[in-house]
Length: 299
Length: 277
Image (tube, rainbow over all chains, first blue to last red; front, side, top):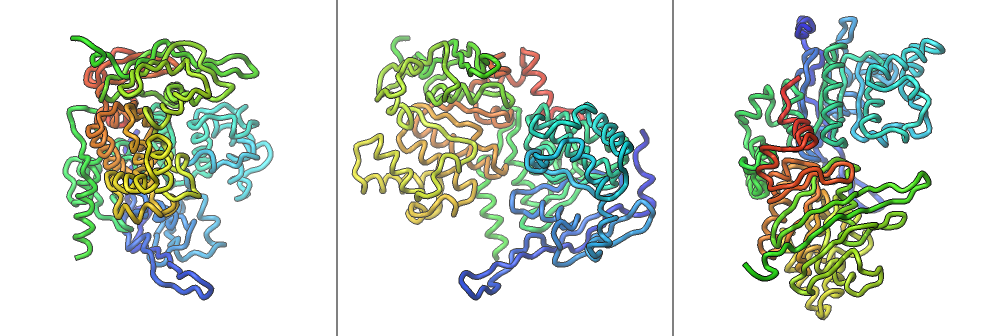
């Protein structure tokens, strides 16, 4: 395998600039008026090179999932641009596209969700779930559809005969493989993984991460990997962006973030991770340190 | 070298828990043995389905039909109530009510499962006090507010009248801890207490459990799948796999030189121990 540098010549695959999402806070009562806004995502910018894996980490409420959803236009951002390079070389701004223009673009950017239970329709067979994107985009039908679904199931480590079963018959790790197959069948260039391995046991998590890595090499995938588990990010991502209160406070190559964090918040976040080495003591006192950071924000 | 001070607080010996299913009897836990010393922390580690939660539930006798404790003994050497054979207690035994929430209490993974959504935080904690101690309602309220302060709730007296839905996940877990510890249990069972929380909140909750454990001198049975949490919290570890304890020992030797192949494979699966692919 050669690295995936060929993609670099056309500039980044994804270029996010000034992405912002504000949610209004309404007053109570009959005449509801906007009393405040929550800046869930506040002026977020980053580039993602083809074949790269960028980790987006932060606490709950930091805006990492909202950022991911704004990029894929699952929700509409308030401001900013998301320049996405299509396989034919054209670059489009996902924020400006209308619903009709967005549909053909969506096949190139797919999402894998956190919860393998709620993200799979319990009343559809696995074959229908994995094949549905092809049907919606009218890319395959009949025998070809069946064949492509079977190929994809085999590729993610499931059996072709699994396609007739329903999601409840599968374990958490297998369900996550089904979710990955559904995303991959569109042959996307970008996959957004929103806490894709958070619900899994460590050994299953390791298998799914290995699968994602293999698929990345094989299909030259680019990952935006949203996660709160810093240990996973450390071993899976090329670069890491740390989010806090809707903003990226630090973005650097993974090794550098973990070896020499620059931002005070990153330092606190890393110190709170319990190390599996009993001789490396974790910091139980992060509450006070975070309070100090908050106080510094106010002044 | 004499007396019960040397003997462990809890001894589980050959515990077997079986569930009858249409396809026959399944033993979720098969002959599990371990002991926890007074004031010590034992981590019970394993993947989902390994039987760690069933083991913990057995101690509080929370196993419901079709599940049943079919073998073994669970001995609690209570300083306040003497030796209690938990596995032999009847479902309606007075002593069992004294054990639950009094001598042994439990923290769950998802705090909302332990909290009633229609009662105020304070009334739920005060209920535990009124059940287990001879106190007036006013005393219970004062004790509750003191406990809420201890677990780090800002404005404890205001929190008393709040409902769980008004609190964040970390704050709810603090309330559950307050509820579990307000009767000064001798053993605290914590079932994945921080799995649903952010690392920064997790660090604070783990720190809180440690501090209060030291203050009350209670033992902790910590159920987790996270070796990071194990390394930072436990004195001893028992690794469970398919209903059996495959390896147990003190935390340092277990994590540094695991003997059993399954323990090694679990440790190798840790992201921090894996070489980048």
